[in-house]
Image (cartoon, rainbow, N blue to C red; front, side, top):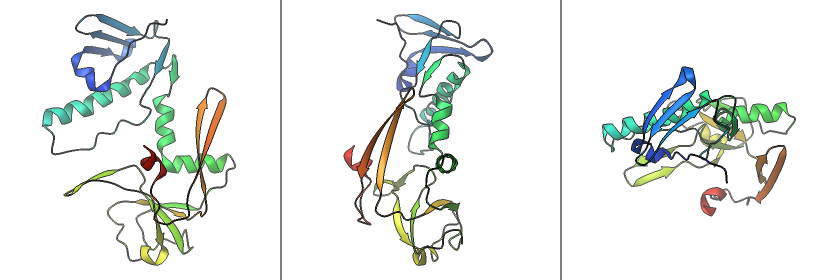
Length: 214
């Protein structure tokens, strides 16, 4: 079989690693072996966690752990210096794909029908005037509350409710409500696309399908 090196983010402190960006080289020492990764010998990179590596500040963990988490995440992003190898889940494409306004811009550019959308912190915005809207975060977020962690879901909202809301603290995504709808999840491998549809109920209090099925 093919030889490969697996680097798990949580285990990186167990290695002694040196990255030389101008030479496109990574030197590494583990307990039982040493290795060198270079642009000349590296064939491909499989980025197993194709998401932007966020590291939200958490005062409950030690300063050393906070520093380590943020800097190792940045270290992994530094692998972008290997430009001329075959990437599976290239971070640059992944990060772009995670930006919701960019998703909508590109979908509209390609000819897809998209709901009218505005990112705003103005509850009296006049871009969308229909009575039924959906509201969601611009980026996934988990909030730390006294009773535990809370994930922010997409919700339906009436325009009349919105006009009395205080949005000044953070922008949100507002969209025309599309009911009923079908979610289509697409996996692209090479030039082939594999879509899977998931019917959504019209219940305004429905839970997120991906969260429930996980």
